[in-house]
Amino acid sequence: MNLILFGPPAAGKGTQAKRLVETRGMVQLSTGDMLRAAIAEGSELGLKVKAVLDRGDLVTDEIVIALIEARLPEAEAAGGAIFDGFPRTVAQAEALDAMLAGRGARIDSVLRLKVDEEALKARITKRFEEQGRADDNPEVFVTRLDAYNRQTAPLLPYYQAQGKLEELDGMGSVEQVSREIDTALEGVTA
Ligand code: AMP
Image (cartoon, rainbow, N blue to C red; front, side, top):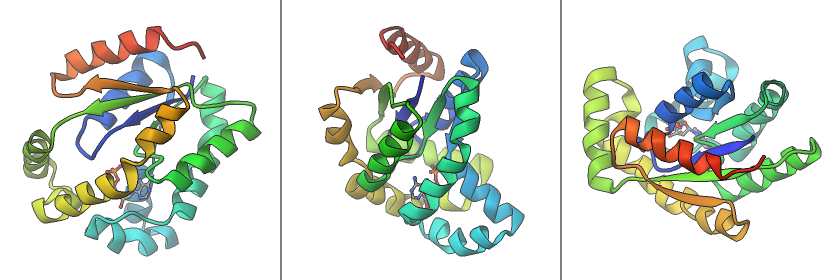
């Protein structure tokens, strides 16, 4: 099964993806984690993208599409991927559909975690205090939310038109959201 966890930054995608890795043995493909790892390693890619992440803007489609493509065989071997933070633009979604089709696979479900902006801001303030991730600071977070609203939210009609979009309430506790996801996945035939 190939699943997209969809939502704005701090909606809980990473937390839920990690749980699904544990409970279902799927592979989490988080482009944000991959980019942060590249920055931490000081690789050529890391040096190229650091300023973009620090500003809260999106890196180019080419970069993230290549990162995902390189990991698809591993996800396929594990029985499926949880895409977390990818795709974030319509071009990325189209590329993902094409890459999966080329492998005889597809996206089976897109689970949208709906969280209102005030709650997101409260979560991010807490995460910034606890983890100190530079792009969680309040000013950069405004840019990240803006990128979501302008570039990523247009994916909702894209997946709606494919009949794959399922809207979930992301405002509850981690356990409540986990239960909603499990219930939604019961209805998905991969
Ligand atoms: P995340 O951890 O998913 O919030 O991603 C952190 C940052 O990495 C984002 O603010 C972007 O700068 C970059 N990034 C992650 N995924 C993507 C993507 N699919 N497309 C473009 N930029 C991305």
